Image (cartoon, rainbow, N blue to C red; front, side, top):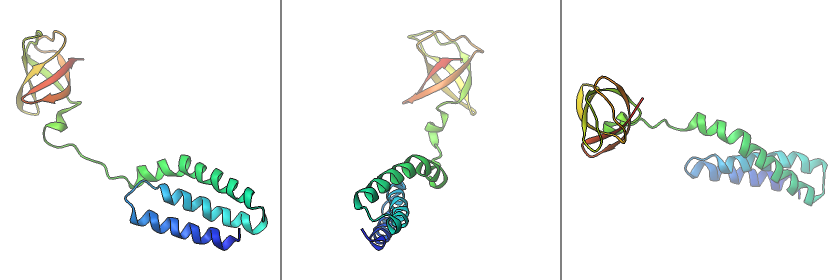
Length: 139
């Protein structure tokens, strides 16, 4: 194929990347097409051009895409009770399954549920929020 076909394809892929939400997928294919246009100027073999396109597109997908996604991706901040997951807290009243205990985290008192015994004063990690209870594990 003529090099201009690859350049046109690359432009179309870059435009498509701009109008679709995130992912950086079509841009990686555009990079492959753009690089293939350079090769097509020197190597007229159409089969070889497709191989170059596939290899360079895959290489950019596995090397450039993760970096670009990390750079451009919005960090989602947890809010409300979801922000408690992963935090550590001190047990105020012992947890002896199936009985609930009590813990205090970020100034709030919560009922604590666990699969293991956790004594008063021990540290626990919050695994999940289930209604008005926190599922915890002993640290």
